[in-house]
Image (tube, rainbow, N blue to C red; front, side, top):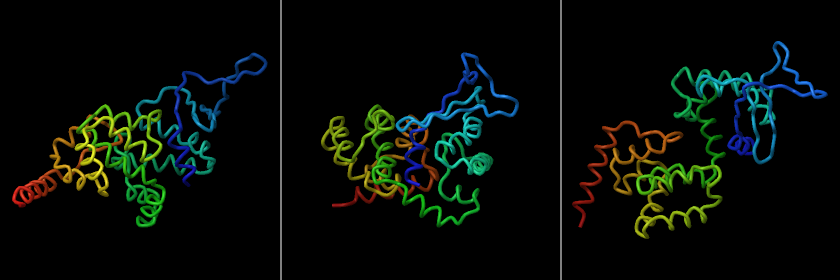
Length: 235
């Protein structure tokens, strides 16, 4: 499953106006009912070619289901994958707001705890660190945060990540950021940096997908004010 996750992160989807095969220098179009996609299973850049232009990202994902599953070497799961995408879309999940483990479990009819367990085993320590660190870094240096999200410029290790951040921030900001990013979730990390909720959410909005603004603003803000008051009264 880790291998499938690694392949999925590298898949490129390219939309083409028309697909045709060349036989003896003669272009042949797919017949009626023929598939309108082609996969190129390159090790570094697996690519899915789709004929036609999808109307929005949701349609694009649904049309890509069969090709993606072929690139993952599980074509028999194409229909299941496509229906799961449709069901997730129907309850509000989609591009820009990816589903959590519980939502995936619900549409698949699987046990939530089991899906959470599987999801946890698939996450690499660097992935988990970046989930928290990137939004925090965006409040200090948006350009540096965006660079960490680039496929071409993503850090390969925590050592490289730390070196790049240190080159962009002051020593104090670097230290505070690294300590805060060790929190398991974004909200306690935000509080460790004494960041306001509106400030962090503004940075998250600037980053865009896959990051989402923190919810339950009123409750979180009340907790933040209590935290700041406690620090102010500390000796």
